[in-house]
Image (tube, rainbow, N blue to C red):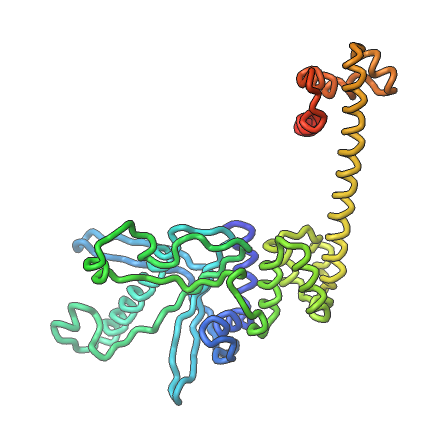
Length: 340
């Protein structure tokens, strides 16, 4: 398991954030799923099929997170299995991958029910014995949600249909589709629908490629970012394209992210200025070498007159000769920079 997947899995395993993302996706932010009603389930999906008495095929796959949810609706209690798959990168086969997870879970539910009937020595007719379950037995719905933690657009298929090449529509209507349940930060229009710090993390990731948007978010939500929990700050560091030093805050319960990000932006601007100054100095040196080469002066003489060592200007001198007689200063600077 990669570092990013480990961090996002740990973050979303928290029941409050887990409930928050599903309440946003399913109920437009209404608090229908309660964190206290979530029960951790085994993430292992197993499918065993028999070919004969002595031969069988087994398949085992692992989800990121799976929890059982009890939801009250119309005076009745409804049971759901809710899964999350964290994606730090775009996955072009995600519809099939999730479809396999869900199908394996349903298959395992049937197997578990059949084992329970067998253990209880329940009487079953021929049809029930053949399937392993009775007409009254029901499955628990499985809903898998993919969270993409990047700030780019999701350009991969969002359904099984999108993975097919051109097909006759008369045939396609008989092929069952499978649609992804997908969260992409860049497609979220109202981050206020989230009730936990998860919303601020997703909002920051969405703005992470734009300094102006980042500053605006910090200004509008300053009170929150002054007291961000360490886990959320770690997610921002990992997925928000920031170089914040989270390690020094490990012993703290919260971080002043406004100061941390302001410092990061300032340091970045300073480095940009320093880099610009370095380029300016280098360009001036290239121009000086060009003028002296035009006068047919040797490398040693140029180094002495410019009070530079021969080794320091050797590369510049060689590139100036290479681009003679035009002496394109900007091109020479680029090539020298590539070398260094």
